[in-house]
Image (cartoon, rainbow, N blue to C red; front, side, top):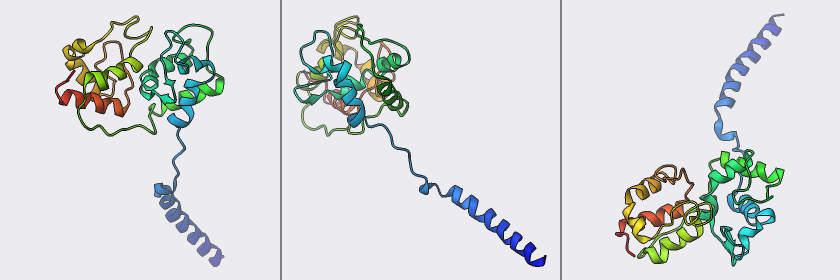
Length: 204
């Protein structure tokens, strides 16, 4: 009887010590794998039903990829459109085009995780000019039937310079604020290039 009481007391004391210590040992809890933008999302956006964004030919289809070059900003900048689409909306460009069920799940999970570019980032050095650096981003990421040059006003060098306040707000928030047409999702590389362009005096 006495031996049983002692064993019970030992077990209770061990559980009282071990369980809380295991719970607090957070480094042993592995982080769940996240959706890879480069490895899972980009292939969805440039193949299958989205292949028109990858042929360099189709009229009014924003080119996400062409000539072996992925325009990551063009995809990241349309996260809001993808979010509406997978929540019951339709393809932003019209037509009978849709993601497959498993593709919707992948895109939805990626957006819920913050719509990050797991291969993003770049080193910005040397002179940054509108012609060499800003215009190409605008052409691949901002122009199109549902964006600037379509339903929204077209932009050029003078308009970018005149709207420096809005531009700074967009870059400071990675696109969440400042854009008159609603929130965007700008890549870290785009933000770096625009910030450096402004810092260098917005040269043409």
